[in-house]
Length: 322
Image (cartoon, rainbow, N blue to C red; front, side, top):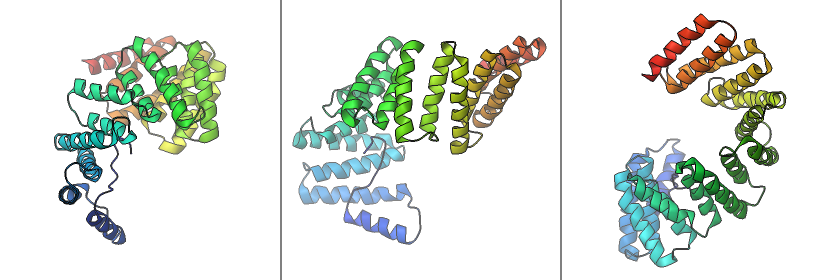
């Protein structure tokens, strides 16, 4: 179970109520389940004693339920209890202990304490857990350290799921985005081949890798091969997520960059304008993403000789930044 996920595995009482809910065609209110999960924990503690893996599981399930309700202060002692029991009974190298570390890190508000738990999980002998937490460390690391952590995460992921695993493609993308274009290109091509085989060409994650690869190619001055990748990615994301999704806006902007590099300024303008319209809908008109869109479009308009229009957009972008 992932650290942020909640999947009840509690008492017969909880399972019976869940079954009745399904029969009635109703959606359960997670908050209403909290007393039932507390009761399950109390019953298991009375039945098995405080130091039992079944008690740890009940504490963990209640803690994750509270986390899903954003009641992290209540969740923290329960997840600490679960971790302590599992460490004593199962040993620190057990997979469940690694998951417990992740669960606890997800509810702790103090960044340094959470980071310490993630570091412990990153050194866990289970390669899947290690890979996941090495990537989390990389996300928070300075740029000069991130690539090394992502490389370690990639190695662990290959151990966990094989060199052709879907999550390997994710780690390849992570690593590629920290590297210069020439080093990033073969990693992204490998990731794309994995996703084409595993997910197919019409999957949003495949489109994300196509987008990343196209950006790398554009940075290397190869606009022509970047264009079909971005057109495919844009079509995929529109079909999967709808025409007004933030990821569609990103692909639209990137395709605009390619057309601009090829000299198709009118085509780039249409795409930049579309990106701006989507981001205004998604984020509102006073968001940093909208300011970035305005600057892109303003620069293009100046390139087209439409300086007055460009200046107006820049002035609007500056007002957003204040």
